[in-house]
Length: 146
Image (cartoon, rainbow, N blue to C red; front, side, top):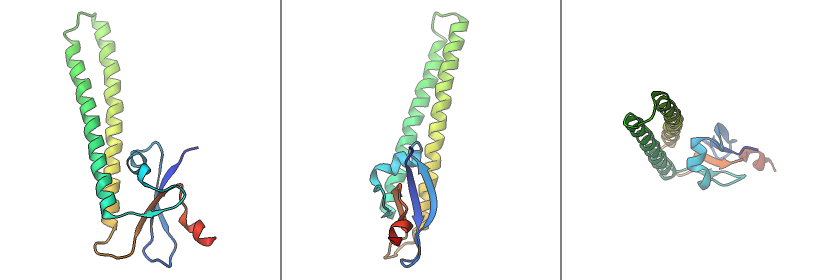
């Protein structure tokens, strides 16, 4: 069973939480913030939390860019090998598939960064009460009804 990171807005303490997004365990968003969110409950997210998540997504993006560049260098070096043209083409095809997979991962982390920026913009500056909440497999409206 897949777990989800759940995100909520709660503009007023006496009103229910409003769900805004859910991300599965296989997503870049979950990968970045999953370890810092509680299970079965929510916690308020701060500007500092979101800044940290954004920084982590940038680090991940750089890692994927580095992998892509390494694969591209491998493609360039294949031309110098003493293999047949067919073998070189198969090797290039295999490496290109790796580049494509890395590009998809990079795109996922770029989308995650945009999501965290979006959340950061939702938090009004200077407010005293929490506004944005997140948790793993959390449904705070159910726990309040108990």
